[in-house]
Length: 136
Image (cartoon, rainbow, N blue to C red):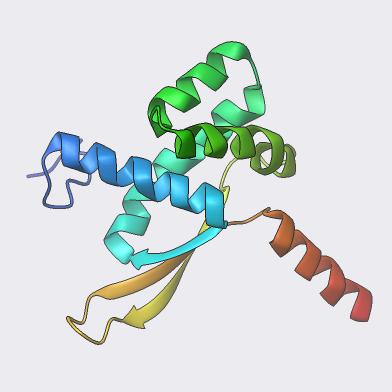
Protein backbone atom coordinates (compact mmCIF):
# COMPACT_ATOMS: atom_id res chain seq x y z
CA UNK A 1 0.00 0.00 0.00
CA UNK A 2 1.14 3.53 -0.64
CA UNK A 3 -0.97 5.45 1.82
CA UNK A 4 0.45 8.92 2.56
CA UNK A 5 3.45 8.36 0.29
CA UNK A 6 3.87 11.64 -1.58
CA UNK A 7 7.45 11.41 -2.82
CA UNK A 8 7.82 10.29 -6.41
CA UNK A 9 11.10 8.37 -6.33
CA UNK A 10 11.78 8.21 -10.08
CA UNK A 11 13.89 5.07 -9.51
CA UNK A 12 16.70 7.13 -7.97
CA UNK A 13 18.19 7.45 -4.53
CA UNK A 14 17.58 10.62 -2.53
CA UNK A 15 20.72 12.55 -3.52
CA UNK A 16 20.29 11.78 -7.22
CA UNK A 17 16.59 12.70 -7.11
CA UNK A 18 17.33 16.02 -5.36
CA UNK A 19 20.03 16.86 -7.91
CA UNK A 20 17.66 15.99 -10.76
CA UNK A 21 14.88 18.22 -9.42
CA UNK A 22 17.35 21.01 -8.72
CA UNK A 23 18.65 20.89 -12.30
CA UNK A 24 15.18 20.61 -13.83
CA UNK A 25 13.98 23.60 -11.79
CA UNK A 26 16.99 25.67 -12.84
CA UNK A 27 16.36 24.77 -16.49
CA UNK A 28 12.67 25.64 -16.15
CA UNK A 29 13.52 29.04 -14.66
CA UNK A 30 16.20 29.74 -17.25
CA UNK A 31 14.35 28.57 -20.38
CA UNK A 32 10.75 29.20 -19.20
CA UNK A 33 9.68 25.78 -20.51
CA UNK A 34 11.30 22.37 -20.78
CA UNK A 35 10.51 19.10 -22.50
CA UNK A 36 10.93 16.06 -20.26
CA UNK A 37 9.22 12.81 -19.34
CA UNK A 38 5.79 12.99 -17.79
CA UNK A 39 6.95 11.47 -14.50
CA UNK A 40 9.75 14.01 -14.10
CA UNK A 41 7.39 16.86 -14.98
CA UNK A 42 4.89 15.72 -12.35
CA UNK A 43 7.67 15.45 -9.77
CA UNK A 44 9.03 18.88 -10.70
CA UNK A 45 5.71 20.71 -10.39
CA UNK A 46 5.47 20.89 -6.56
CA UNK A 47 9.19 21.75 -6.28
CA UNK A 48 8.87 24.61 -8.77
CA UNK A 49 5.67 25.93 -7.24
CA UNK A 50 7.27 26.09 -3.80
CA UNK A 51 10.09 28.13 -5.33
CA UNK A 52 7.58 30.61 -6.78
CA UNK A 53 5.90 30.90 -3.38
CA UNK A 54 9.30 31.78 -1.90
CA UNK A 55 9.80 34.28 -4.72
CA UNK A 56 6.51 36.00 -3.97
CA UNK A 57 7.56 36.58 -0.33
CA UNK A 58 10.75 38.33 -1.49
CA UNK A 59 12.53 38.51 1.86
CA UNK A 60 16.19 37.88 2.56
CA UNK A 61 15.28 34.58 4.22
CA UNK A 62 13.22 33.43 1.22
CA UNK A 63 16.07 34.36 -1.15
CA UNK A 64 18.52 32.31 0.89
CA UNK A 65 16.10 29.37 1.01
CA UNK A 66 15.61 29.52 -2.76
CA UNK A 67 19.37 29.55 -3.37
CA UNK A 68 19.81 26.62 -1.00
CA UNK A 69 17.10 24.66 -2.82
CA UNK A 70 18.52 25.48 -6.26
CA UNK A 71 22.17 24.88 -5.33
CA UNK A 72 25.16 27.10 -4.79
CA UNK A 73 26.66 27.36 -8.28
CA UNK A 74 26.51 30.39 -10.57
CA UNK A 75 23.59 29.00 -12.58
CA UNK A 76 21.57 28.70 -9.38
CA UNK A 77 22.43 32.28 -8.43
CA UNK A 78 21.26 33.50 -11.86
CA UNK A 79 18.11 31.41 -11.67
CA UNK A 80 17.28 32.65 -8.17
CA UNK A 81 17.63 36.23 -9.38
CA UNK A 82 15.36 35.53 -12.38
CA UNK A 83 12.87 33.75 -10.12
CA UNK A 84 12.53 36.74 -7.80
CA UNK A 85 12.69 39.48 -10.44
CA UNK A 86 10.63 38.01 -13.29
CA UNK A 87 8.68 34.83 -12.56
CA UNK A 88 7.40 35.68 -9.07
CA UNK A 89 6.48 39.21 -10.19
CA UNK A 90 4.49 37.81 -13.13
CA UNK A 91 2.65 35.41 -10.78
CA UNK A 92 1.92 37.87 -7.98
CA UNK A 93 -1.88 37.80 -8.48
CA UNK A 94 -2.14 34.01 -8.84
CA UNK A 95 -2.92 31.94 -5.73
CA UNK A 96 -1.26 28.75 -6.97
CA UNK A 97 -0.97 26.64 -10.09
CA UNK A 98 2.04 28.46 -11.47
CA UNK A 99 3.03 25.69 -13.88
CA UNK A 100 1.29 23.93 -16.74
CA UNK A 101 2.01 20.40 -17.97
CA UNK A 102 1.15 19.60 -21.59
CA UNK A 103 1.36 15.99 -22.70
CA UNK A 104 3.28 15.52 -25.95
CA UNK A 105 2.83 11.83 -26.70
CA UNK A 106 5.48 9.14 -26.60
CA UNK A 107 9.20 9.38 -27.27
CA UNK A 108 10.18 7.45 -30.36
CA UNK A 109 13.16 5.58 -28.94
CA UNK A 110 11.66 3.99 -25.83
CA UNK A 111 7.97 5.05 -25.91
CA UNK A 112 8.32 7.05 -22.70
CA UNK A 113 5.45 9.52 -22.23
CA UNK A 114 6.78 13.04 -22.83
CA UNK A 115 5.49 16.36 -21.52
CA UNK A 116 6.16 20.06 -21.77
CA UNK A 117 6.21 21.94 -18.46
CA UNK A 118 6.02 25.72 -18.56
CA UNK A 119 5.11 28.72 -16.44
CA UNK A 120 1.50 29.82 -16.79
CA UNK A 121 2.34 33.51 -16.29
CA UNK A 122 5.71 33.64 -18.04
CA UNK A 123 6.34 36.97 -19.77
CA UNK A 124 6.40 35.30 -23.20
CA UNK A 125 3.09 33.48 -22.61
CA UNK A 126 1.40 36.65 -21.32
CA UNK A 127 2.59 38.61 -24.39
CA UNK A 128 1.18 35.94 -26.72
CA UNK A 129 -2.20 35.97 -24.92
CA UNK A 130 -2.35 39.77 -25.18
CA UNK A 131 -1.59 39.61 -28.92
CA UNK A 132 -4.39 37.07 -29.46
CA UNK A 133 -6.79 39.20 -27.43
CA UNK A 134 -5.82 42.31 -29.42
CA UNK A 135 -6.43 40.53 -32.74
CA UNK A 136 -9.92 39.40 -31.72
